[in-house]
Image (tube, rainbow, N blue to C red; front, side, top):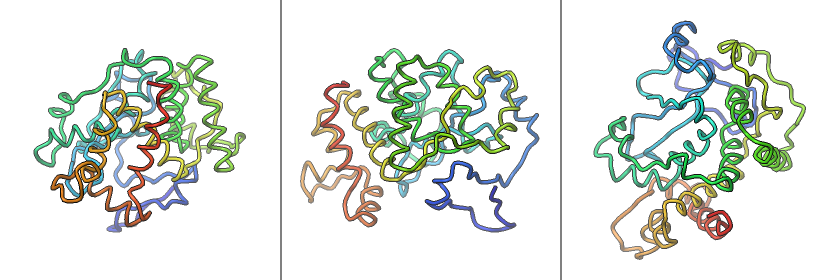
Length: 296
C-alpha cells in the first residue's frame, strides 16, 4: 500500500509499479465501508464499479474517460454507471465501446465546455448488447480483460466475467492469458495477496468468488498499445466507417494535407511523436484495420 504524506502531490505510479499485480494506491480520503455498501444496496452482486471522469479539457488526450473501479466510495467527479445483473457479461464490450477513439471523436463534437455530464452521455451512440455476435465477443472480451484485469483488486470483475462465460469464451480468455504470459513471464501459480479476502468480504454472498482461475495479466505497454489499437479498429468497422474516414479521425492532415486547419487528437499525436518519434496510435490502428475482415 502506498499513501502520500500530508500536503504531498498526487502519486503517479511508475511503469514498474503497474507491472506488479499487488500494487495499489491507498486512498487519501476514507468513509466507512458500511456507508458505501448502504448506497450500493441495489448492486450487492458486484465488487466493482464503472465510472467516468466528468472533466473534459482540451489539453487532455481523451475527452471520454471511462474505467472499471474496485468497489469504493466514489466522489461526485466520477459519476457511476450500473448494469443489471443479467447484463454483466456485456460490460467488457460496453467499456470497450466507451473507450474507443471513434466514440471519443463523437463525444468531442457534442461537448461545448469542460463538464462531461449524464446529459451528454445519454445522447451518445452506444451499441446495444444485441449488436454483438459471438465472434465479436470472442474478439473483445479477452482483450478487455487483459487491459483491465492487471491487478488483484480487479479479480472480482474477472470472476464475474468468467462465471458468465461458456467454454469457448473461457478458452479464448485462457489463450489471451498465455499470450500475455509469454510476453511478460507471468506466473500462472501466483498467489493472491491476503487483502483480497477483505475485498471479497464486502459481498459475502457473491457466488462467483474465486471463479476465475487465472491471476492478473501483467501490464505491458507495447501489448496494451496494440490491443487498444485492435479494439479501436474494430469499433471503427462496427460504426461503419470507411478507411478514409478512420484516417481522417486519426489525423485530418493525413487525408487533406499538412495545410488543413482542422485537428482531432492533436494532444495524443504530439505526445506520441515526442515519445516514440511517430504517431504510434495511427500506425497501429491502421495496421489492425487490415486484419479485421474475418471479424466484421
